[in-house]
Image (cartoon, rainbow, N blue to C red; front, side, top):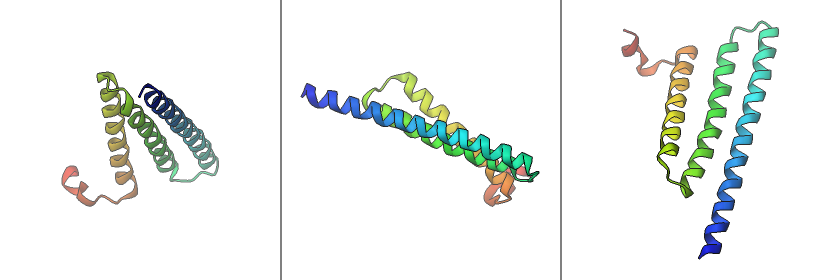
Amino acid sequence: MELIQTVTATAVDVAAVLFEYFSMLALVYTVICALLSIVRRRTDTGLVFTRGITHALDFKTAAELVRLITARAPRQFSLLAALVLLRLLFTFIIKLETGKKGNMDSIEG
């Protein structure tokens, strides 16, 4: 039984680290794309940057969800809640930027 727990904990740690590396790679890629967008004087630079950060947050959220499988500490729940709120905020910003407001008309007045 202890062997199964050790293997599971190791697999969860490896998966979480991989998701965090993908998050960092997504963020670096986003910064490079945003800088190129600035150099090319494109008007959608903010949108490119916001979408990239959203993707990086998705990977970070996945890493925290995987970690939450083995350790259920209150700190991890609060970190996961903060990441989900950031994701919702970026989704809201993207919808405002792209003009796909949907139900946003009632919020703006």
